[in-house]
Image (cartoon, rainbow, N blue to C red):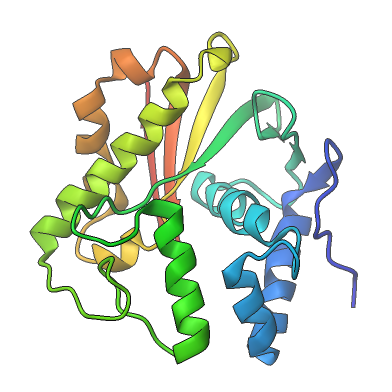
Length: 228
């Protein structure tokens, strides 16, 4: 078996075929070793020092490539020291992509955003389960209308946090947003139905000052909103 490219090296060219193969190999390893799968979800740097980066950047990049229809021969470089986290080359086209996470903005939850994800994984590892909704150890009753509002709020928050970084101005960037769990929570909606109204709240004249395109991804879900 070929060796996985994980962990990625800084500023080295890779093909998307290699990235897809790495994700396929990692999935097989996780299915065969639940302890490994748990360590990857926990994102503890002492156990797997690249787990958080893989979960929040490398894996979403694969979802972006699938959504854009990039072929295995197209290439990318991971450039975390620069304005772009990734530089993608597809034929004559070059994309410079900055990455971020969006979380369900549940005001009633005990924990928020990435802290909530961490607490869920820790509780699940110890107890074998956790409840979604923000309270972890007890169920939270919500309806789809609430989920739609809070996920849109999370996407708005994620985009605004990146726009606030003035060093991104004039860099010709696109934004990749990983909305982990959004597609599951809002299974009756397309990702575009979730995302477009959220970005319209900000206005393309606002986020378009920094980003030419915003891509929002989740497992089996993809939305692409271009600056007007």
